[in-house]
Length: 512
Image 1: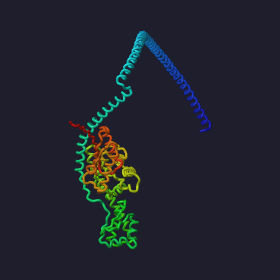
Image 2: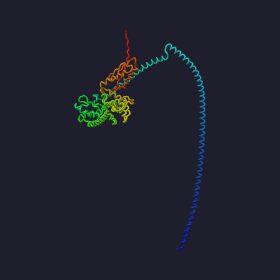
Image 3: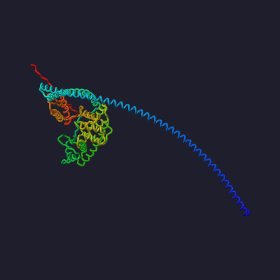
Image 4: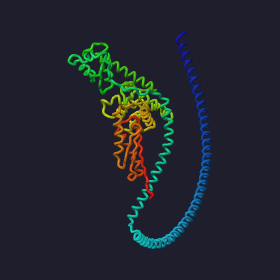
């Protein structure tokens, strides 16, 4: 094809495009017009609907406003009615108050008139009383003060007699019931806790195989005995006692260590300073082990499980401590057992009583090198190792050095007294026994009005006879309490001491 044909085809193609573009333009224009017409119709419809909704809302708002207005008018009317009623009620009350005030004013006038009349009569009564009082003083020849003194003396005498009678009656009833119950509990406790009697007092006497052994113990120029005494901290007494030497020391544990060491040295035969120190060291360990085992065994026997090892080690030292011949460790176990029986009968805490009974004399294991009483020392030591405060108070108060704060503390004190006072529990030598009896009578005789006193029942009772002219019934009760308190403060004794005051009046006449 030639160039002209190509140009012709190009012109034809361009013309077709132009025709197509014109057709598309006209068609699109007509579509846009139709679309605008539809949108205009929709907008007109929305406006119409909006106007209808607005009209309906306006009508509803008018109706609601009308209802609110009507309700407000009704509420205002009701409130006005109530206010009117309240005003009427207040007016009525005001009228009543005015009437009452008027009546009170009238009554006040009447009372004032009566008061003036009463004042006049009171003045007349006072004048008459003064006249009668003067007449009575003239007749009785006694002033008012003297009469008051006589009346007070008679009243006091009568009151003291009634008080003594009531106190005797109350004490008799309380003793009758308390003694019966106490005897049952104590007898049951003693029967259930079987303990051995005291058979012998602990001594530190070492028996020798022969008299020659004394010379070996003393050594050349006394070097062996000096080395032994210095290392053991004891005194070795070599006297005329045949085939025996005595070890003396205030510390029972050291005395026991020395006794064991000396017995071993006698059996071993090698007695010289170097060997003495080694044997004493071995025996000290042996005694420490024995003390620890004794403390554990005592806790087991008493049924006390929660005890610190440090406390058991100190408790075991009581194995070598005695009081009036009674072994203190056995005494502690016995107090724990007796206390548990009494606590079960009285409904107290058995575990607290057992622990306090076992540890109540703990201070005796250390009071030789610590200031204070054994009760306070033991309580402080127990508190340091976390013992229950109830137990600590029972330990500290079993000799009334502090106030007893629980029933358990009272039970421990009672069990301690029972253990020390039961038959066969303790023993003391004749000299100490006689001194104690004399001290009891001296304390009783030191009180005013005491005629005679006698220590009876092996020193477990002091009987006091008073002069009836100087001491009345109430004073007799006071003397009994004061003597008991002074005995507690100034004496040491096993168990308890009964104080009996006897006031006897005798009437004597002669037929002639």
